[in-house]
Length: 383
Ligand SMILES: NC(=O)c1ccc[n+]([C@@H]2O[C@H](COP(=O)([O-])OP(=O)(O)OC[C@H]3O[C@@H](n4cnc5c(N)ncnc54)[C@H](OP(=O)(O)O)[C@@H]3O)[C@@H](O)[C@H]2O)c1
Image (cartoon, rainbow, N blue to C red):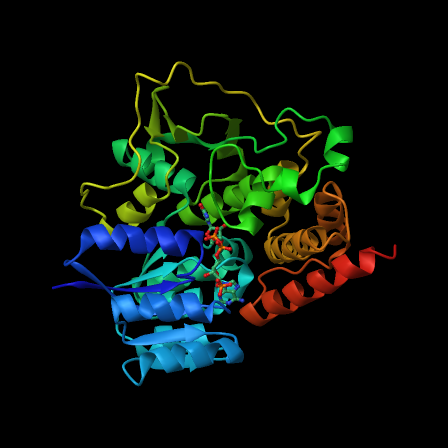
């Protein structure tokens, strides 16, 4: 039986890497659904090549390109609910969640509700609604497998022992383009500086999150929900070479590290083929050229986002939704030239501090908190 795959966010960095992996996994895997926001021409081209059953495109105008290219050969869903409709209507085995931001949340929830395997790159829905997603997955039998390289690393290193034998996990971070910059220098950082990531090629939002280390903050929260670790069991190590993605420390002091070249095709493929491992055309590690591996603790003074992650885990409730939405809104303001680089995390923290805490929020509460936080970031502009 072929494995049927839907890719949400097929036109982005993870989406394109997923299609590259699926090229190698043919004919055992097939693409049955593709989805994007406004890149109509690109997704239409992908659909012509992969012949899916349906394509979802949020933007109405871009839908014309997809319809024209399909000539009735595939269904087209369009508008704000398009991704959820795609997940609902097309039978599949695996949903690759590769949309950027909380926008991917409804379709991820639906895929989990339907009991699909979800290959999760889109960490934001987990940061916002992990407390609801995990019980939902338990009920439906959905498997949520990490695509983030660090979480894939933890997942793989956890296979070396029993869950209760694990003392601590470490997520590594390259440190981003400003690893050696002073706070004063970072205040002056331009968009071009922030998009100049030293080791990974990714979409713009995650690249900026990697520069503020907010990406690592989101990953700490993601690790808490995905694996059930408490805040004090999740550490971060700056590791500029991005060769070790995660370390798992066991009760006896043994530390299992997961290593690999910085190429997302490896964790993407593992989430697709798990528990099998197959040959992969991703870059391979070359130990002859790896002269040294460096590690240092993160500087929480220059990179306060990490501190915010632990604050969010302590607060629970709406805090994850607030942190994520405020950050998304602040990153947009920075990309539009409305605020400076250092203000991204400053504004996010202000909004987090101002929010009204709530225990055990529903999905509607989380979505309302998301909307409030986005508006509050703009209101902060005039504070
Ligand atoms: N890139 C990486 O190496 C990497 C590594 C680990 C984790 N991740 C995570 O994976 C996710 C995707 O990252 P990325 O770097 O691939 O992002 P990206 O290159 O910006 O791609 C984003 C994708 O999402 C679609 N999209 C954007 N807004 C949408 C909306 N409102 N509704 C539906 N679709 C929307 C885009 O469609 P259009 O092209 O039509 O705009 C595109 O297909 C993020 O959560 C990120 O944190 C990425």
